[in-house]
Image (cartoon, rainbow, N blue to C red; front, side):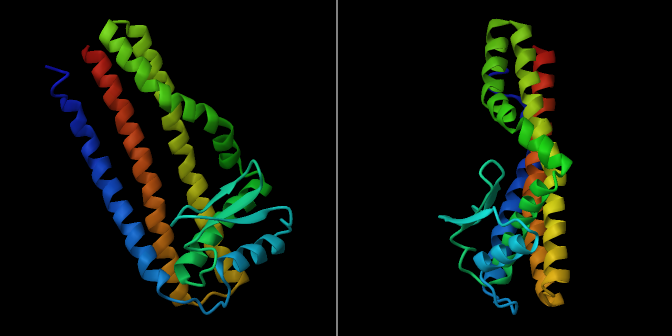
Length: 226
Protein backbone atom coordinates (compact mmCIF):
# COMPACT_ATOMS: atom_id res chain seq x y z
CA UNK A 1 0.00 0.00 0.00
CA UNK A 2 3.00 2.27 0.70
CA UNK A 3 3.91 2.49 -3.00
CA UNK A 4 0.43 3.79 -3.92
CA UNK A 5 -0.21 6.16 -1.05
CA UNK A 6 2.49 7.71 1.09
CA UNK A 7 1.04 9.84 3.93
CA UNK A 8 4.47 11.33 4.67
CA UNK A 9 4.11 13.36 1.49
CA UNK A 10 1.74 15.59 3.48
CA UNK A 11 4.81 16.89 5.31
CA UNK A 12 5.92 18.65 2.14
CA UNK A 13 2.71 20.60 1.58
CA UNK A 14 3.70 23.66 3.71
CA UNK A 15 7.06 23.88 1.90
CA UNK A 16 5.46 23.47 -1.52
CA UNK A 17 2.94 26.22 -0.76
CA UNK A 18 5.70 28.51 0.49
CA UNK A 19 7.75 27.79 -2.64
CA UNK A 20 4.79 28.64 -4.86
CA UNK A 21 4.07 31.85 -2.95
CA UNK A 22 7.74 32.91 -3.00
CA UNK A 23 8.07 32.25 -6.74
CA UNK A 24 4.94 34.23 -7.58
CA UNK A 25 5.92 37.07 -5.25
CA UNK A 26 9.44 37.51 -6.59
CA UNK A 27 8.21 37.47 -10.18
CA UNK A 28 5.43 39.95 -9.39
CA UNK A 29 7.64 42.35 -7.46
CA UNK A 30 10.44 42.19 -9.99
CA UNK A 31 7.98 42.95 -12.79
CA UNK A 32 6.49 45.83 -10.82
CA UNK A 33 9.76 47.54 -9.96
CA UNK A 34 11.22 46.83 -13.40
CA UNK A 35 8.75 49.43 -14.65
CA UNK A 36 10.19 52.11 -12.36
CA UNK A 37 13.36 53.87 -13.49
CA UNK A 38 15.96 54.63 -10.83
CA UNK A 39 17.17 58.19 -10.39
CA UNK A 40 20.74 56.95 -9.88
CA UNK A 41 21.21 57.10 -13.65
CA UNK A 42 23.11 53.85 -14.19
CA UNK A 43 22.35 50.61 -15.96
CA UNK A 44 22.90 47.33 -14.18
CA UNK A 45 26.23 46.77 -15.92
CA UNK A 46 27.42 50.29 -15.12
CA UNK A 47 26.40 49.92 -11.50
CA UNK A 48 28.21 46.59 -11.24
CA UNK A 49 31.44 48.02 -12.64
CA UNK A 50 31.24 51.10 -10.44
CA UNK A 51 30.75 49.11 -7.22
CA UNK A 52 33.40 46.54 -8.12
CA UNK A 53 35.97 49.22 -8.93
CA UNK A 54 35.08 51.15 -5.77
CA UNK A 55 35.77 47.97 -3.79
CA UNK A 56 39.07 47.42 -5.60
CA UNK A 57 37.77 44.32 -7.40
CA UNK A 58 39.15 45.26 -10.81
CA UNK A 59 39.81 41.60 -11.63
CA UNK A 60 36.11 40.65 -11.45
CA UNK A 61 34.57 40.61 -14.92
CA UNK A 62 30.98 41.30 -15.91
CA UNK A 63 29.17 39.24 -18.52
CA UNK A 64 25.66 39.25 -19.96
CA UNK A 65 23.68 36.01 -19.98
CA UNK A 66 20.24 35.30 -21.46
CA UNK A 67 17.11 34.95 -19.37
CA UNK A 68 15.29 36.70 -16.55
CA UNK A 69 16.68 36.60 -13.02
CA UNK A 70 19.50 34.30 -14.11
CA UNK A 71 21.99 36.66 -12.46
CA UNK A 72 24.75 35.04 -10.42
CA UNK A 73 28.35 35.39 -9.28
CA UNK A 74 30.83 32.64 -10.19
CA UNK A 75 33.59 32.53 -7.54
CA UNK A 76 35.67 30.09 -9.60
CA UNK A 77 36.13 32.41 -12.57
CA UNK A 78 35.53 35.70 -10.71
CA UNK A 79 32.71 36.68 -13.06
CA UNK A 80 29.44 38.45 -12.31
CA UNK A 81 26.89 37.28 -14.86
CA UNK A 82 23.93 39.58 -15.33
CA UNK A 83 20.74 38.51 -17.05
CA UNK A 84 19.34 40.32 -20.06
CA UNK A 85 16.65 41.68 -17.72
CA UNK A 86 19.21 43.57 -15.59
CA UNK A 87 22.37 44.13 -17.66
CA UNK A 88 21.11 47.12 -19.67
CA UNK A 89 18.25 48.10 -17.41
CA UNK A 90 18.22 51.16 -15.16
CA UNK A 91 15.15 50.07 -13.20
CA UNK A 92 14.94 49.87 -9.43
CA UNK A 93 14.48 46.09 -9.59
CA UNK A 94 17.48 45.58 -11.87
CA UNK A 95 19.84 47.68 -9.75
CA UNK A 96 18.77 45.85 -6.61
CA UNK A 97 19.44 42.43 -8.13
CA UNK A 98 22.79 43.58 -9.54
CA UNK A 99 23.89 45.04 -6.20
CA UNK A 100 22.99 41.73 -4.55
CA UNK A 101 25.26 39.80 -6.92
CA UNK A 102 28.08 42.28 -6.34
CA UNK A 103 27.51 41.59 -2.66
CA UNK A 104 28.54 37.99 -3.36
CA UNK A 105 31.71 39.17 -5.12
CA UNK A 106 32.59 41.28 -2.09
CA UNK A 107 31.88 38.31 0.19
CA UNK A 108 34.29 36.25 -1.89
CA UNK A 109 36.99 38.91 -1.73
CA UNK A 110 36.63 39.21 2.04
CA UNK A 111 36.54 35.42 2.49
CA UNK A 112 33.13 35.54 4.15
CA UNK A 113 33.09 32.25 6.08
CA UNK A 114 29.58 30.96 5.18
CA UNK A 115 30.35 31.56 1.48
CA UNK A 116 33.67 29.75 1.76
CA UNK A 117 31.95 26.79 3.42
CA UNK A 118 29.14 26.77 0.83
CA UNK A 119 31.57 26.88 -2.08
CA UNK A 120 33.59 24.06 -0.53
CA UNK A 121 30.69 21.66 -0.14
CA UNK A 122 28.80 22.72 -3.30
CA UNK A 123 30.25 19.98 -5.58
CA UNK A 124 29.66 17.32 -2.92
CA UNK A 125 26.13 18.60 -2.27
CA UNK A 126 25.23 18.42 -5.95
CA UNK A 127 26.60 14.89 -6.20
CA UNK A 128 24.82 13.86 -3.00
CA UNK A 129 21.50 15.33 -4.06
CA UNK A 130 21.55 13.43 -7.37
CA UNK A 131 22.41 10.04 -5.86
CA UNK A 132 20.64 10.17 -2.49
CA UNK A 133 17.28 8.95 -3.74
CA UNK A 134 18.87 6.25 -5.89
CA UNK A 135 20.51 4.61 -2.90
CA UNK A 136 17.47 5.26 -0.71
CA UNK A 137 14.94 3.64 -3.06
CA UNK A 138 17.22 0.70 -3.88
CA UNK A 139 17.68 0.15 -0.16
CA UNK A 140 13.91 0.12 0.43
CA UNK A 141 13.18 -2.21 -2.49
CA UNK A 142 15.92 -4.71 -1.63
CA UNK A 143 15.56 -4.45 2.12
CA UNK A 144 19.17 -3.33 2.39
CA UNK A 145 18.70 -0.87 5.25
CA UNK A 146 22.34 0.18 5.04
CA UNK A 147 21.83 1.52 1.51
CA UNK A 148 18.75 3.44 2.62
CA UNK A 149 20.70 4.97 5.48
CA UNK A 150 23.50 5.90 3.10
CA UNK A 151 20.93 7.66 0.89
CA UNK A 152 19.73 9.61 3.92
CA UNK A 153 23.31 10.57 4.75
CA UNK A 154 23.90 11.80 1.22
CA UNK A 155 20.72 13.85 1.28
CA UNK A 156 21.75 15.34 4.63
CA UNK A 157 24.72 16.95 2.89
CA UNK A 158 22.38 18.58 0.38
CA UNK A 159 20.21 19.82 3.27
CA UNK A 160 23.28 21.30 4.96
CA UNK A 161 24.05 23.17 1.75
CA UNK A 162 20.59 24.79 1.69
CA UNK A 163 20.96 25.82 5.34
CA UNK A 164 24.38 27.41 4.78
CA UNK A 165 23.00 29.22 1.73
CA UNK A 166 20.61 31.29 3.87
CA UNK A 167 23.18 33.49 5.69
CA UNK A 168 25.08 33.89 2.42
CA UNK A 169 22.04 35.25 0.60
CA UNK A 170 20.78 37.42 3.45
CA UNK A 171 24.23 38.95 3.92
CA UNK A 172 24.56 39.69 0.19
CA UNK A 173 21.24 41.54 0.30
CA UNK A 174 22.34 43.45 3.40
CA UNK A 175 25.53 44.52 1.64
CA UNK A 176 23.55 45.51 -1.46
CA UNK A 177 21.20 47.77 0.49
CA UNK A 178 24.09 49.31 2.39
CA UNK A 179 25.97 50.10 -0.83
CA UNK A 180 22.93 51.58 -2.55
CA UNK A 181 21.98 53.67 0.45
CA UNK A 182 25.36 54.92 1.70
CA UNK A 183 27.64 54.83 -1.36
CA UNK A 184 25.16 55.76 -4.08
CA UNK A 185 22.61 57.67 -1.98
CA UNK A 186 19.65 55.85 -3.52
CA UNK A 187 16.41 57.65 -2.54
CA UNK A 188 14.34 56.13 0.26
CA UNK A 189 11.40 55.31 -1.99
CA UNK A 190 13.67 53.38 -4.36
CA UNK A 191 15.34 51.53 -1.50
CA UNK A 192 11.88 50.40 -0.44
CA UNK A 193 11.43 48.81 -3.87
CA UNK A 194 14.83 47.13 -3.71
CA UNK A 195 14.01 45.71 -0.28
CA UNK A 196 10.71 44.37 -1.59
CA UNK A 197 12.42 42.55 -4.47
CA UNK A 198 15.32 41.18 -2.42
CA UNK A 199 13.12 40.04 0.48
CA UNK A 200 10.91 38.12 -1.95
CA UNK A 201 14.00 36.55 -3.51
CA UNK A 202 15.27 35.59 -0.06
CA UNK A 203 12.04 33.71 0.63
CA UNK A 204 12.76 31.40 -2.31
CA UNK A 205 15.89 30.24 -0.46
CA UNK A 206 13.93 29.84 2.77
CA UNK A 207 11.40 27.73 0.88
CA UNK A 208 14.18 25.60 -0.65
CA UNK A 209 15.70 25.02 2.78
CA UNK A 210 12.34 24.11 4.33
CA UNK A 211 11.58 21.72 1.47
CA UNK A 212 14.95 20.00 1.89
CA UNK A 213 14.60 19.67 5.67
CA UNK A 214 11.07 18.27 5.45
CA UNK A 215 12.14 15.90 2.69
CA UNK A 216 14.92 14.60 4.94
CA UNK A 217 12.47 14.06 7.80
CA UNK A 218 10.19 12.26 5.36
CA UNK A 219 13.00 9.93 4.27
CA UNK A 220 13.81 9.09 7.90
CA UNK A 221 10.16 8.32 8.65
CA UNK A 222 9.83 6.09 5.58
CA UNK A 223 13.04 4.22 6.46
CA UNK A 224 11.88 3.61 10.02
CA UNK A 225 8.47 2.42 8.87
CA UNK A 226 9.96 -0.07 6.44
